[in-house]
Length: 257
Image (cartoon, rainbow, N blue to C red; front, side, top):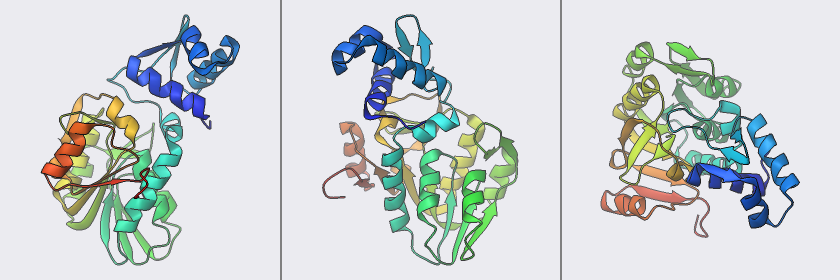
């Protein structure tokens, strides 16, 4: 499902408020209630929102949005973030790419690189990059999560610890105002922590919707990364943390990007 600008804004409002109402949305967008109901029905069919009487709600902060729905949220922003991240990675480098739809966008943007070694616990990344003969793909072993092709668990952690690479590309499901990088699955978090510990330069990629979300499991703190790439840093506390801890902040949606 491709989200229209109005649908994208509706999702953002639902994230911020927890719930949206048909009549309020119709007034806000100056459209008919029938138009809004169709938008909500489409978003609920895609499992991005949950339909309730009079409106819709955003899923609980203890469970992530379904994979196909996540791919559509901020898709254009993720593509730009992916291109920016790929631009930081030279040829002849080794890198980790972690689970996530934004990290997958980075993988998509690396296809013109040469002599890369990409180590990943993301089946989707491995399946795309395996087609390019100048990129060597190494895939972690472990439990394959059926929902999104992520490989998680202790076996994946042990596998990652065998390497020391030039770069790591990681994502987060949510970013707290205190700089905590958060996710939903503690098994995935353990792999992400191993990736951070075994890379010389850590690149965090996350679109601005992640500032509006919550998740229960801590991956790391923002000062543990070297570069943070987002479309817009809408959280003043995060911008301040980047400045205070020498984290390079790149905003792909800014005029200077």
